[in-house]
Image (cartoon, rainbow, N blue to C red):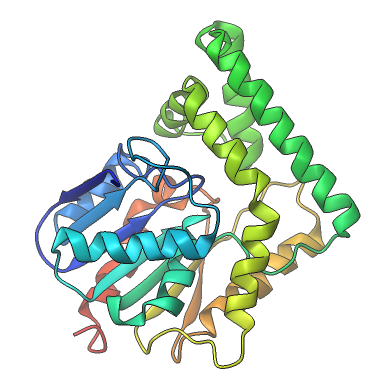
Length: 288
């Protein structure tokens, strides 16, 4: 059974979060979630085998999308709904829209993970993925030993969040990161997901580029962060931009909107901007 939280009143908005998809517990930020609940019925959930949900972690994005389809029908919320996918959740949201278009009244992608192949040889990409998995497993052991509860561990967390975002993190970003780093199970869940990441990206890319693939004719917005970490090569930045355009083009009237002064942590840094685009999606004639 998937752990699900439903808040607010009004049109249904379903949130699919980044990383492993642990959506229950405020991972989108208090200001954003409270603001959204003031204008919509908000559904958040933990994916199978993640957080407080039972079962094993789904092995494919298609399984995650089908789980989401079953969940929204089981909860009894009003459908079709607006689906919002952030980061890795964008992969699930895209696959769900392709497989279950009848569920969908609108789509908002928040700096989604690119599904197109990363511009580097597989001979380099796969070892880097293995290294990332190995590092996460070591991190889980360090977390279980209590490292991240120490002053030294807190400095490591701050440095990691700063490097990832490219800017000085907010208090809430540090709180969320600390919660993750001090929860060994969450780190192990992320390592299992990362071990399948290359397969996941190829799976979604194939679905998006299949003949006749398209999203339903609903309002579709891809919110792209303008600020990237300086260490990201220029060709990777171009790759991100191209993938976001391709994602928007799957919808008849899809669009890409650049979020100025925002990093990948868009809902935490600019919650009002994300809320604005969700509100516009709800209010659009096509949605109605």
